[in-house]
Length: 288
Image (cartoon, rainbow, N blue to C red):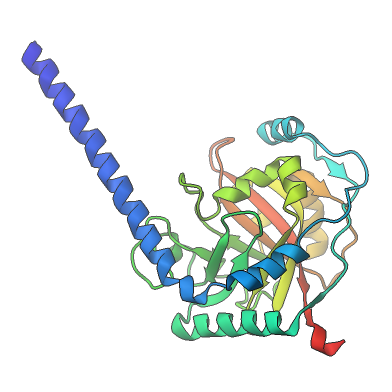
């Protein structure tokens, strides 16, 4: 009996040790992969400019939900909470040198890794990654931007979307990693307080730079029609409002384009958190 217990204890210890080794190996591989992208990452001075442009200078109008209320709505997938829109940043210009550096870095990234189609940055979060796109939605779930096998995968655009983000709805995916990387931060946006303090993101391509004005955080099933990029915005937006835990009503035009950041979450089986924003194309201040 004692011998059996000793064997079971030894096996359990071996399994735990093996799991720890694999976890360490995966984290190390992810850090190495990210370090290969450092040369293409916007430099700190550029990020500082984007951070400053992202600061919310006015408080939102109307009643805001508390984090507890938002969490309850997410867990029950109940009624949509629609608040008055917080005032978005009105300037649609970037300093010429910032615009030039961001587009040049995105172009260099694409020249080095042809599947790389842009760079995504959300101030105040860990989201600061290249966006990839392949011929399917499987490859970059398990591969780094350089094509090496990687458990954390990459951030990638749905293969059915046009690679310059010209679709009405552009869907971007990444894993929700336990170490807080990739799109783990997206799940925090379902709390109203966090949402209100992280209102903007930035997307740089080789051609232009977009500010992302976030207005919705939803938790849906992985098969929800939100993932049907062929749906017209006029039909897609009402459904988004219906399933959103946080939705800030706003007036959109037929020519507006949107980006949805999707990752796994655990409110129910096959749950996904989807953070959506409007793409606002920036102008260089040289054109003023």
